[in-house]
Amino acid sequence: MKQKMNYLVLLLTIIFMVGCTNVEDAATTDKETDPKVAATDSDIKSENEDAVEDVVDAPEVEEPKEEETSTRANEEEFAGYDILEVDGGDLSGYRQPNVAVDIGYGERVYWAFTNDHGQLVRVIADEIILQDDSTEPVTSSGRYYSDEAKVPGVESDILDEGHVIADSLGGVSNAYNITPQESTLNRHGDQAYMEKSIRDAGGATNFEAIITYPDTETQIPSSYKYTYTLMGNEIVDTFDNVNPDEVNESLGLTGNKPSESTSSNTSGDISSVDVNGNGQVTIKEAEAAGFSMPITNDHWLYPYMDDRDNDGMVGE
Image 1 (cartoon, rainbow, N blue to C red):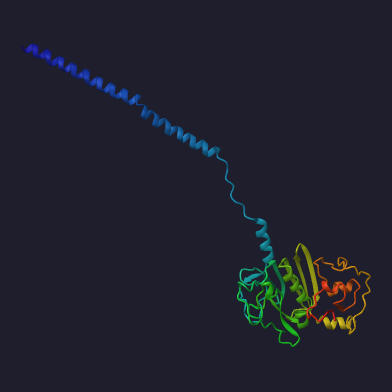
Image 2: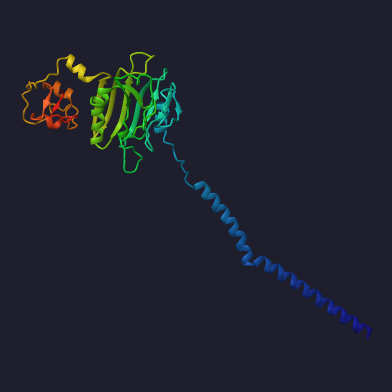
């Protein structure tokens, strides 16, 4: 009996050991052949390799290049000048030396430059934008401000507080846009004519004013040179800061009785007279073409000229 029991225990032990071995083999086999686990490891490795290849093969992204040309141009334009902010209605006549000031009203950008002596020597504007009295606060006299800066010299009876860029063209009234200017020149002469030409054209581009002085002590200019573009035509206006009527009289170009023209051109073709091609004839252009002043309203040239006082004569 005892021997049988030993055989039975031995048999059970063998069965148990065989069963455990099968379980371990099955677990090992399952682990080795589990497609899910194998695929995951492979995918990770493959993805990493693809990522590296993508990084290597990816095209280089170019950084946006700065506009070196415009930046360089701006740096050259303002080299040696401090940028100064001045209220457009500042009545002080004092100017700081070697500064650049924006003298455009509102959003306009017009730059004025002074020299070592505080003299206003240059004004530039990429575009002259006309005054708009329907949207801008303008006085009844067509001004942005009720008065202009008191630059030394404007106290003279014959000198106006002359704008380099007029109110009607969008200029402010501080000392960086005002020079003492001969009153007839400012109101009826070349200065006024230039401003009217720009207004009639609806504005101008590439505007530059060069202002010259007789010495380094005065703030009263001796001459002006304006360069600007109207309807694709470059205009250059140069004139002295003097009374044009007195100059014409001293040259014998004025008189009570109109003189007959010495020009044979009576066909109404102004191409030979209108030097700058803007469709209008100045007194200088007419005289250069051989016409004597004044030009009356019965003259064929009269409609192309500016009779500012509407008295039927130009250049009287």
